[in-house]
Figure 1 (cartoon, rainbow, N blue to C red):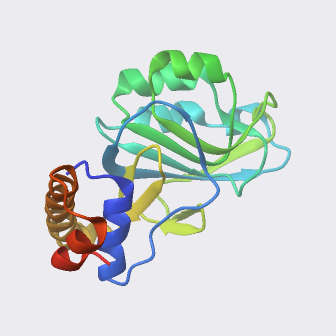
Figure 2: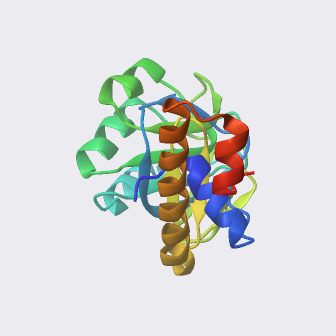
Length: 202
């Protein structure tokens, strides 16, 4: 079910569900990812170092999970190279941060798929507190709950409600099949207008 993010978005449009996250930039990794969201709620301020809590987040990762950090969009790093290596070894499929990451070269060297709002050398230690793991969060303007799924690629990030995944996947499958027919028609010489009309693509 690793459809393009645009296909998932179109499927959610048909279900009248808003799911596309805004303002987050792909920093590391490539290709489509799909997995259950593991949500992390954070607060920025001044805190004891032990309240940073990234070790608890890493321990909570299950294989295939996609971490979704809600740091309120703060330009303070909540995730760096060591965390990326540990998350990858723990089986994380990706990381979404409505906040910041750092150590970009180290993160990229792990191959971990990661998108964030900001990139900064500023450490979150003493500045970020992990409030809850598994609680509802907001990332890119979209609420994400435990049980929801995240689909992402180079184009963007989409939240799929867990209880609508089956419906969305079925629609996405049909949309993908229609697009493949469209591509074949164009390659065989049919005009865009004719193919779009025949397939009711526009």
